Length: 207
Image (cartoon, rainbow, N blue to C red; front, top):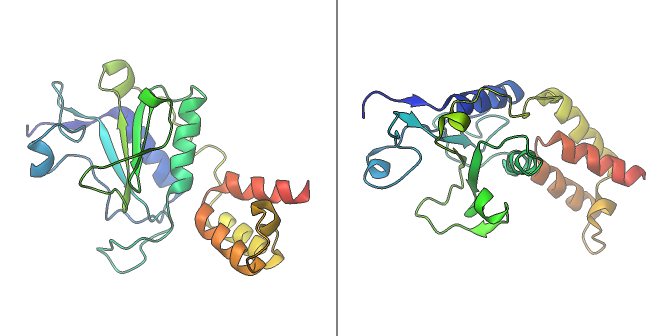
């Protein structure tokens, strides 16, 4: 089908993600499926209304790790995945159907429990987000809450630098056999631009 459009709710989500991570890499972004998708069943294919109900977001949220086109892993998008699932569990985003990332799938069907994903695409360079096809959900323009109260990239970098240098993360993770600096740095890589995780770690350490 040559005449297609991205589900409005996914446009809202993409705009929020772009607002929160204005310098993110978009090499692995995707909407309309290619010939491989078209040969099978995929939310990347236009439905009966011509609506594409899937969106891929490159995992390098802080920007390309190499000159474009870059397909190398940079800042993991695990924090974004956690936010998407948490908002769905809280009932804020009934349009969300499932999320795939790093060979794991999280779906409403199974209560957002992590399950192994065995598809040909490992989704290790981008996050796949699918929404329901019915107009009530696909055409929604309500906010996803991703951009709400978001810290800027510079804010997060300053927090990360302070946490890194102050070494406040290690006791939160509870490891005693690993060098504290290594633990702090690994933790910061894991949480990436997840401001809530950074603040939670600091709060837990202070408490």
